[in-house]
Length: 351
Image (cartoon, rainbow, N blue to C red):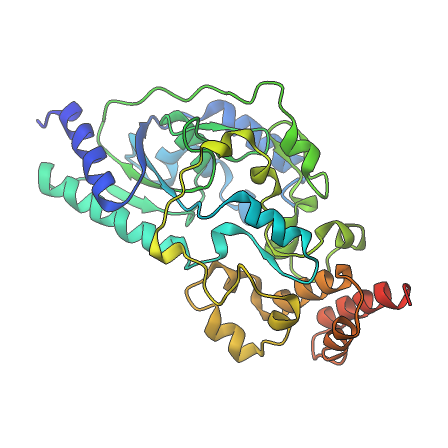
């Protein structure tokens, strides 16, 4: 029988060597989180994300998702790079495109999954074959609740996981295991009376502490939603063409965020500096080539043009902006044409 406490120490050591900044062990009981999830779904706050309800309670019951699961190894990988002031500078410049920080570089899923697989193999080398499954946002898993129970941080009022020493600019990943490892102490909450994230949200999507109405959330509207973006949200979207970071940018705990330079997470295709006009000019072939291995691929080319059209509608009026929009006025997609027409109307109204 292996010394499980020593094994936990080894797992943390191996995790650091593999590039994870923190590792914890959680039990699989998520009763209160299951109640919260059921209520969120019952109220329809998940919008068109039907996959959130598709697997029933398996999302909150790891032992049902993967029979035999006794513990969850939860890891954190930081992706914060640069100063927050740079993000605000982009958001304040209506001619530039804002892409959520997590999507500026390569897609984190493959990188983390590969490293978690390596971690599992190191465990097997130490104790022999065991039952496990690696997850990186790839199955119905309540990863933030599990990470909280593993001591990695608390779930903030913006529903992001927040670490007292490192803020919230990080990715999460898990290994479900059939080993009764000693567990860590769940993180306590430290948001206090702060409501900065609720107050800053451009579309007021955080309808109560720890509750987001996805149907109003810019990340949902620019990534998950297919078809038309409701007109009431187009102006508040501003120049955010893929996701939104406002609630993290204002979080006081992010002053402690570690600036981590993982090469795979460095900005690609000049996305941290690009103008809306530059990105709107991409052909579909260019989009597919430039977004290979990127989270941005999720929105699709039509969604990409739709989002940029909205941002161009919010940009300062100029002959260039109007000409850029008119270049897509006859696009094959009815969705693109609709949003281009809306955007042009914003500028014509100012002429």
